[in-house]
View 1: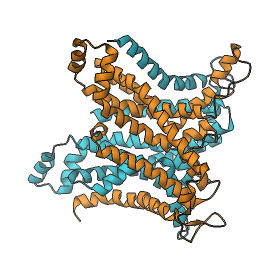
View 2: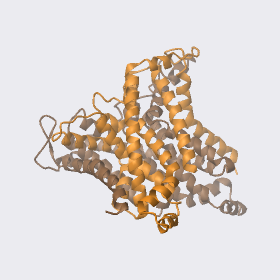
View 3: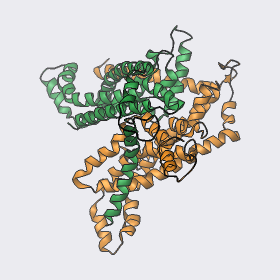
View 4: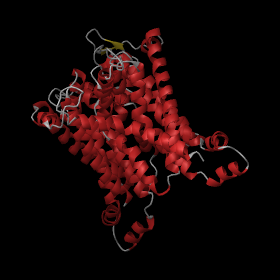
Length: 276
Length: 253
């Protein structure tokens, strides 16, 4: 065995044993039947997949897609101007970028908990509003779809800003000047010049936000309080409380497949270079 | 061109990212148990220090993060170097896939594997299974950081070493490895943070005797109001921030 093969061996073994093999087991389980005591038994069946089309689960699927889509749109609305601002910030670019990245690297759990602290009945918002006598009883800010959406946007905004910034930074300022010289107003330049030429960054950023939002588990769990169930929560529930591993496996595969296909589509498209 | 409006918008977006964490930290110093300010106090930090569950969680988290990040750094560095020598599409593909696989899916899949394997070996869920899982998801992060560094590495340097009589292995250890050192340190710190922070996968593959700090925090946050969680969170934010800044400095070298 040459040096390269020996170097690649540990990575290959680890990924085969603890990434590929677990997924293969989940694939196998998804075609099996739930046993009486929560185990996994024969016969082989495709029932787990047809069950995903039940109205309850279809509802969860749609909710997940819808939440991920909304979160992506909000990240784009919030992130595009931020990226544009940083791209034009001149020498202080790096400082601004660090500021975007820093909360991203502080614990995901802590970031989600921060919103729990702010939004709950005895949280900051409700306490302040009640002290000011704006409201007499706490507003139900937590444990609903809105709180989950807020958490998703908050947690994944940097995923949009970074590729967006990379694209905008490469834009030739002459394009904007030419547009202005030809009499376009700033808003026109933005809509007719900047947005069209930076489309690759918008697409790349959107996919990078959409994928983790679709598979989100912790945010809907903590901020949705079990009321806003998304695919990730369905999977967790089937593997723990409900102990229906075959069905949980089928749901996992559906989730995994959606994420992988989206990424593959992005990698094969002309937008791939925005990710590197 | 409407730069003021853009500036205001950007400031608002940045405030959105930072204010929640700042509020969290400020209220960790609040004397009151409730969300009204009653003066500066360190009582929640003292309470956090003397909480046996938190210290046990911290201990477990540190053991797991140190062992897992060390293993992942070694494996990831070797992997990145191997891929740099010549493409390895299956391995690269599975590393990318591991990055986009939803954590919850990775978690249940590993749980399924472990439960299946326990039929043949008399083992149980615990620190070991958590470490295995953490290494599995950290290798991709390490490989990406090291690969970025290797992309600016001149292949002729190794060739020169070998022309001068060094073996392939010696050329790696004496020429390439020193060049990679800052990136290896950066990747190691990154893996440390990623491992220390993980809740979703950990909670699925941890046993009763291997509760990590995020698991304890999660349970406390679920139970309700406790400024102790704020204090622990503030400490984590500061520690992570420091580690990440060091890691990024190292990557820019």
